[in-house]
Image (cartoon, rainbow, N blue to C red; front, side, top):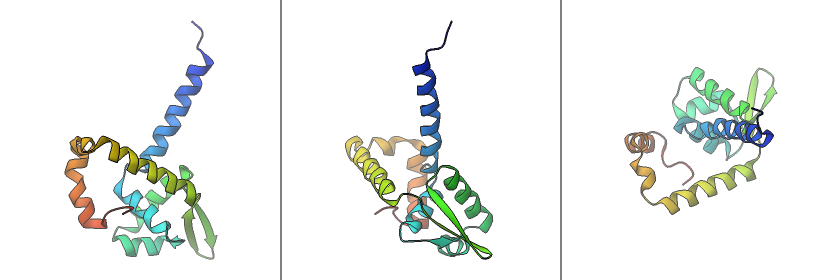
Length: 129
């Protein structure tokens, strides 16, 4: 049976979307994006702001670079990171806020959100507030 090209394209797009949304599924990555929304940062800056290990911050930065959400800019021995498309990220965040408004408390019914929500707020504050 021949595979429909549209189905194959949809599967590729779906995988790409899932990978992109994984970037937003981690509170630490959201906090990194929030910090970068105020301008370029070095790994050291983010480590100091977030209180995470350098290796952890670097791992998250690598993931965000692979997703195309941030761009690295080497300067001497340091690398500066910035949002790749700040305006598009703001649109995506606005869309997420609208979706949460539309679903009311439905998002809070997700076990992983309910359990993590308060610890995330205590650690990094409200992201995008």
